[in-house]
Image (tube, rainbow, N blue to C red; front, side, top):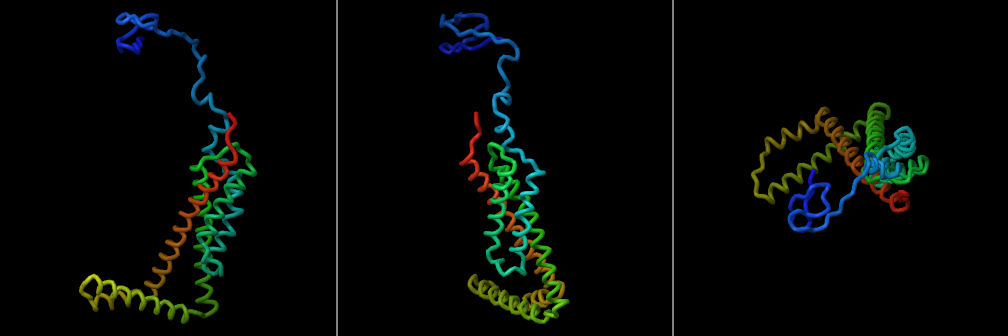
Amino acid sequence: METTCNRCHQSVPTDSTYCPSCGLPQLVYQAEPGAIPAAADRWPEAVRDASSIDWKTGIRAILTLAVPAGMLTSQFSPLRGLGIFWMSTAAGLAVLLYMRRQRPAWITIGAGARMGLVTGLVAGWLAFGLSGADLFVSRVVRHQGGEIDSAWKEAVTEMDRQTQRVEAQMSLPYNAAQAEAQRRWMLSPEGEAGFQTVGLAWYCSLLTLFAVAGGAVGARMVGRRRRPEI
């Protein structure tokens, strides 16, 4: 095995103390096998495990915050307007609660984001299910189907007006027959149910994204207070 001279960049035998080309003294050292620890062995255990999550403890912390967040962000909650705040806060607090119970020296932002993702998925599906159950109860048990259909009809009419306004501003031709066919489909039971389902799914997906951000922010806040002891 040969090295390279720092001055002339010519090959120097490993056992030579001088460069055969320019005569520059060379630093020669030998180490026993295993004397230099591997890179992974030079880091403390807390640093190597910073990106890993003890999911047994993590799931407990996530469920503690995800369940109330899902209830607060569902459609029957009067505080659902603050859904983004509830979801991101729940994810951040889940990371903090996990750190308090697990007490690792450090947690990476990526690990916090993964905990936020799980928090968002659990809370989002709970909000989706509770919102669907609330619509079912309102229509079937409370017999409020007429009010729901009337509100949906007004929403479809407003969307049609906005579409006409945008097409007029862009000087696009307005197809009355196509618009009427689309309006009839949206007012049909299938169309209304489809739009309600897609709207709830989009809402829950948005909440999940903010939960990921909240988990990352929570890990960042913990990382500023706790550093691995090297």
